[in-house]
Image 1 (cartoon, rainbow, N blue to C red):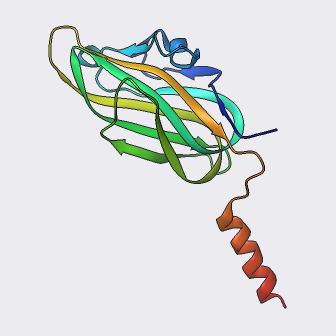
Image 2 (image 1 turned 90 degrees about the horizontal axis):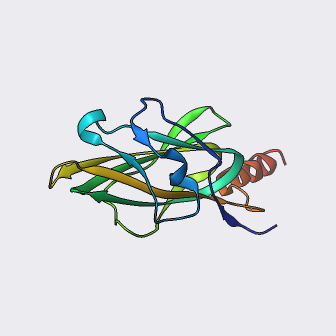
Image 3 (image 1 turned 180 degrees about the vertical axis):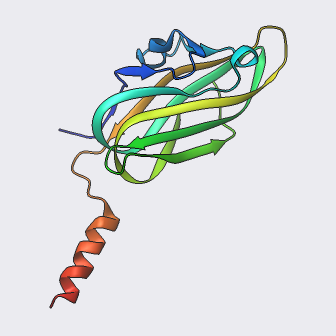
Length: 155
């Protein structure tokens, strides 16, 4: 099996702030999930997948009647049961943007929210798509190095 981009398989909308959530992972960048950030504020949409070894994620976002100022992307590590920060800052809109994780992780969730500036009535933030990069056959170099150091120290 080769490394591959995998789509999420479900979602959590903890604050019920999003509409059309499944569109954020339907393999179609045309139709997005949307967040009315004036009505709900910037809220996370969590996208789910069975545990997989991952080294990066990618997202496709845009805005309607707003400027997307920044996004916040995190992943949930199934190993230590903690959210890990991936990226916060400006992002290109209307195209795939990849973000590399700090290390290879066994993840089950990606969450994203955005800060936007309204430019006209009824502004919406759009989350078009997200994918996880499944890293098959790649070892975590830091864990491998620690194992080698322990082995050398044991000699």
